[in-house]
Image 1 (tube, rainbow, N blue to C red):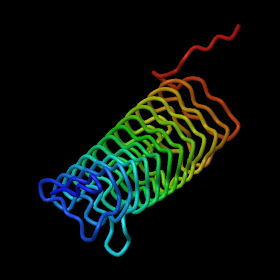
Image 2: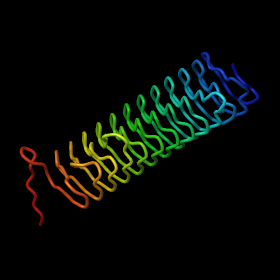
Image 3: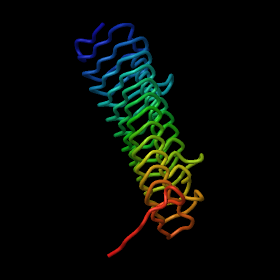
Length: 231
């Protein structure tokens, strides 16, 4: 079906509960953009993609949702890209997010300017903003933290309830224990902290473990020990 006056197009079972006063919207799939009442230039493909919430109209604009239940709960969030089943599933007002992978940014509600690439990347993020997670389950348990960068499967995975900010982890499982510490750096696979609350610390090298705030550790121990030369 189509609304020729509004240039809205609905295919393959897509339907709207009420009148959509937005323009240049395309929906494909059962219940796609179901509760859209306004909003412009949206593209939704998949069962309940960008469906919105009953009694809370979907008014967002410039969103792209491809995948079953992608951006399913969106209300006024705009300029989001959700690619993959359940990507940005609970997003309501968050904007300028990019989620690529199944359940990436799944629990995000109001967080904005996040980039998640990989299945379950930034899965539990709710209000954290300006995060980058590249790799499966990166920043997985982050809830509120912002300005974090995680590169590598399960980097900055966390131990639950994370609120850390401004931390960077590069490597598989790098920074996996960090929970509420800020301004930390982890370089190397399983480079980590001995506690999740340290701040201003750095662990550099495979399996290196920093043991206090305001500290730097170079290299691990045992078979992961490193020779360090300066000068």
